[in-house]
Amino acid sequence: MRKALMMTVAMVLFAYAAFASDGAAAGAAVGPVAAWATAIGMGIAAGLCGIGQGLGLKAACEGTARNPEAGGKITVTLILGLAFIESLAIYALVVNLILLFVKPLGA
Amino acid sequence: MFRTLVQKIDAMLYRRGFAVADARRLMRNQMLLAAGGSAVACLASGFANWGFSFAAGALIISINFWWLSKAAQELVRVKQGAMFTLLTLFYGRLVLTAAAIAGLVAWAGASVYGLLAGLSTVVANAALWGVLQMRHKVPSVGKGKEA
Image 1 (cartoon, rainbow over the protein chains, first blue to last red):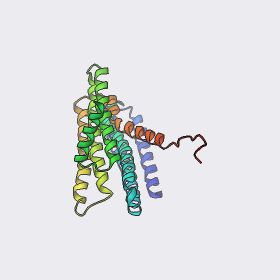
Image 2 (tube, one colour):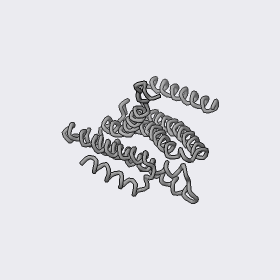
Image 3 (cartoon, one colour):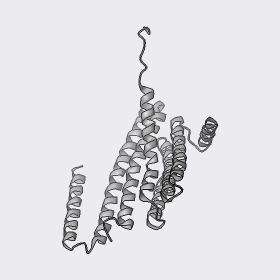
């Protein structure tokens, strides 16, 4: 957990430094920075959503193993949880695609 | 008429492997919400780009939700040998969703706000489901004569 936190902080600092150096170049190379930002952003989103889905599925399997009669209710809750988590990943994907192709921050 | 439609959808879902009743209801609600929302969005926008983008987003997320529900129902009671098929379905679904959204945003020129609104139908469905479940769980107030 501490490692993941350290890596996240390092990535944020790296992105901040990249944007700062880019600002000094007066917006000459926003494209590559945007590409890096989308790659890092999608990686973070996918990784954290994967952790969330894994934890949810683990808990659902354990719950069903302990109390098989509650399997139906657990399954529905699992589906809802997975849908919520996955919609977050899909939102991140859409935002990254907007940054890459629609280019609201400039070319 | 609406009840007949609901019964037909329920029967179709049961035949397609939605054995858990609540999961079936959830999927049925998603289908109705996506279809109704798309029709309203297309009519309200005058069949403009926004409406079609909403419909595309709702369709993508409904298909995604369909496969997710089926995979989740199977995953909690994994059978021998079904793991590879489930994993293939799971990742294939993700790849297809990403490809469809990328195509819509990058090449088809879809309205991003419409697409996001369409993709949000599954969140709206889940939130609605949660609210309805909470409403059903609220204990009815007795008149004091129960004892």
